[in-house]
Image (tube, rainbow, N blue to C red; front, side):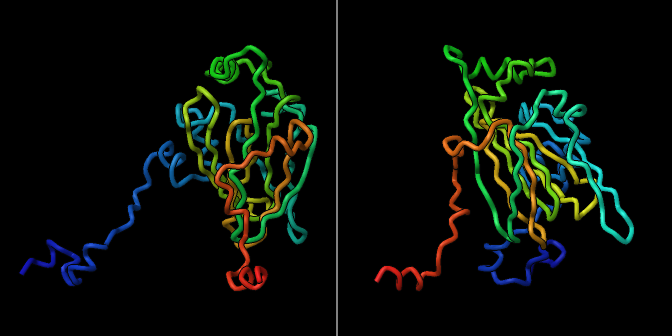
Length: 245
């Protein structure tokens, strides 16, 4: 008989052992976690300079501080247009909106079309705007394409970004953002360029409330969807059969 020390699962039936798998609890480096199971936005911001090719060009993240007010609640700024990341990249939203996602719900993937000037090759155009730290942000046509900047007031958001721009490497970033109702290192905001698909899930135990600014006003023609079946909540099968009669 095989010693128990050599086979910890020797007490199981052979059929069960064939189906058995164990979870890998090793943390892994931040870059691989960012592209896989995800990290907190605080970790992504803190390690930004070391993430290199793992980062999607044009994506911006910045921390937010929530001030506790004993016995009353809390206070938190969203952003200032005259300083910080939005001022640095020249992004001043033209429209602000709010959205609520109930517990266990999800949205996306959403994607907005990037503006390509007439006669320009998309890959070359993107390289001029996003290649390296010396990229020229003044080339960006914020008035002709939709950029999003998102803030979360309650709940916990699990966000996934996928770069789908022509000529750009397809990169994936996944991170969680805590709403102001959960003060801590993962209170933050994210800027999403057009051409980057984004999906959101409410993984907290309360409604997820977000406020977001867009560089242009709402345009239904720019609201693309990729694998967004999760948004189409089906009726119970018996209800559907009854309605079809």
